[in-house]
Image (cartoon, rainbow, N blue to C red):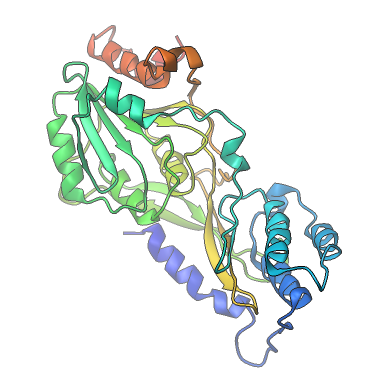
Length: 357
């Protein structure tokens, strides 16, 4: 199986060469003071971050701006904040600076938008606190069994083929499935492959990945394709699927949407995803702090980046009025669409046609 995980392992194995750690090349070093640590941080990002062109960012100017603010008598917390502010210029949720006392995190990719999700509301009003949960997935049947509902909260929790099989068998009489990825901040990309394998009956091209080949902002390898195969022994779900998204659908969750939206029986409703299509890399600066950032761009099957998010097929925001009345109008719309399919409106009635009516 041409898994993305194997490609990532192969490409990351090449990174020591690009980091200048081989053979006859000299290894750049920095003093362990504020200026040396700042220069080390700026340089490793300059040489290995992968989205400078997409972010339209003059990193040289950014470095000059923040280096000028360093003061030898500033304390380490102020220096950490200054470095964090510099990294925030990348506008990337995959970028973190980690010290023993704090971790920086860029939040504006989701904080400036409606949340469009309330798990407590769904548990209370739709599931009656009666659902099955394991491995980050919680599922139940809605609308007298006509609609399957699954909320996947994090790709950091391992999900098994056996659990997915059991879930789909419990939904065998449902007309369609709602896969809720709202507030899913990502995690292990291997879980993307495992999930997609249950929704396809033939191999599919999932996308492409590249890696840095040099320090220049445009130094990248050729794109390497990766594909997914159907599950070898398990239950396939080939009925209609509605994926629910919000701005906090990020990283591996964004990647799952990127692959699934190409399937003919899948539509996406809710808000634009948060993006995050770069595989991260970690490095360290002299004082021992670590920095994590996007290093390898992942493209969709059309060689398009989804770093800045994926638009839904149907955009819906939750409203204060609907929340006050105990309704998730994004979920309500998804239920309505699947129930309308079950009613057999016409032979040509599909999810993709229904969302445009």
